[in-house]
Image (tube, rainbow, N blue to C red):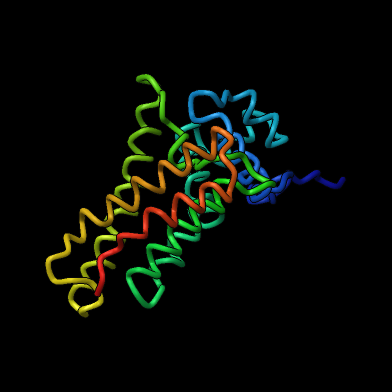
Length: 202
């Protein structure tokens, strides 16, 4: 008599986890953390809540994974900008990238990192803290790049790298908020151009 064997414990999941995470990222991007219900998320992902918990953890953990995907995908312009040869080119690429990423025709308008937890209560505290840390990390990376530029003589010695980094992040965040309100890419690029007119001369 042949014994029926159970499926191996490590069998593959019955869905595309990568595609599901991409769709979850878009829901959070469009609706924010609190606006995205578990029903919205699982429906968009095409899976049950049980499958979501098994594959991604709870809503907080799913949001963090979605933010990581956003950083490596639509927001990858920030990491690329840091590799530009001069501080001014870094700033130009950073703001231009923000304008483009915030107005992609195939994606929600604005920035997941800005809108994800703009108006959340106590249940969304973890998401808000994650986004604060995300933005602070970007500021720190810009600060380090501008400190390097000062050391190399690419920026004036009296330049405050931290202030310059926060200035760029503030403009980029404003670009994202305006994009979410329907401002066009061309208009946002003009804002970026104006913001860079008074860039410190070397």
